[in-house]
Image 1 (tube, rainbow over the protein chains, first blue to last red):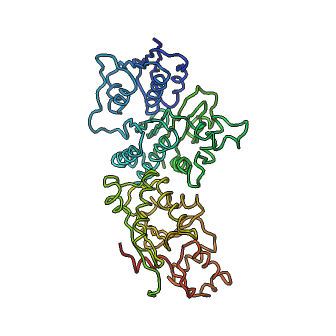
Image 2 (cartoon, rainbow over the protein chains, first blue to last red):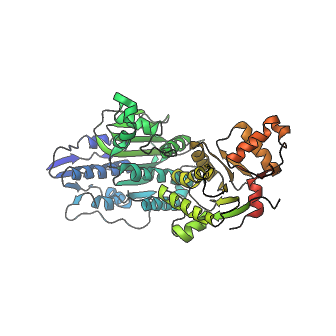
Image 3 (cartoon, one colour):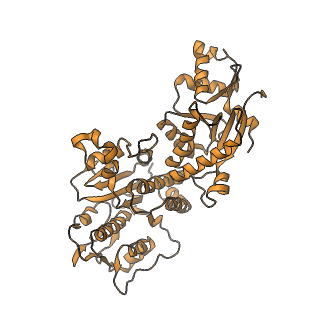
Length: 294
Length: 195
């Protein structure tokens, strides 16, 4: 059995360490060993689900071992990760993971997105919960809950309209006291659909000529607002999300294929473009919204 | 109000959602929802076929309006009714919920090079989307005066005044009667609206 080591901490900064261990050419059982896991953000959770799904697609039977620390499994339960993971991984006997408990302080649990009704549910759930977090924790104006809902709606629709495959969304607020000296909200969206390059190829590859590839496809969607649909009015979602995230001094990145593109605020050291990464078949969107200061 | 002006029809989109489309879905999000709402609006408008009319599309009670849905409900509706082969002689005025909707509606209109008259609940109407400086001046002047007879804009825009009003009428942003008098859509809607 192949064993994939999950690092002690898995968040948007090091998810590549997990993808690097995936080998789509090798079938057979795979164990995602999460025993040492101490900290994971929504990006890490969705990355883990996507990696498990990729392993399953490649013919492996993905299994997962539980974190040793009960507070970590409790947190993963509250975040809805355990429930989502049951649909991806095989669990060993005597699993300590439980079904999601009742209402909690979670901004948005790991939620599968496959249909438009899922988008409606995400928006309704967030509207009911996000107000207090956005205004009390992030110090955003009261109206921000609507803009926050719109961001979630548009990123989730991206899965349905462009990925043509299942995906997930999750969000939570954290205190980045040491890292940034501020509270943040982290939104993660991931799918293992066909990715930006394949989605745009038929319509736009020719105009990019030899430059066409994962970076060009991400630039086309992210910077130029191009989509596979020829009609005017399409492609606004990402453009408008970029504007709103920038107004909040946030970070927005999209990982697809072998590349990542990002709008990076001053507080982030992430480069605007990364290429030559391990191939990822779908897309992963990461949004980090920091507490407003001043 | 001159009785020869157009009628007005008010469509409460929240009620439309509740009664006909998705009783448990209060928000205007996703393209399929937007397409369904646009179809439902058009079905309502068919009842007003005949003479020209102003349709007041009331979005104010909709909590969340996303860009995809606004593109379908606002922009694509306007695109269809701006063409010469429009199915009905309809003009549109939107009522939205202040700045939370303003930004969304403005963005989707701009993407299509469109403009629309929008009541944002602050006591006056706004011209959102894409308009030239002259169009903006003419529209705001008409909005204040409610009606302008031919030549009535000359003190503001000189010889260009009538042509600019004609252009606004062509863009369905003002109503122009057979005698050349221009009427503000908000004036028509406020006097004649019924659901």
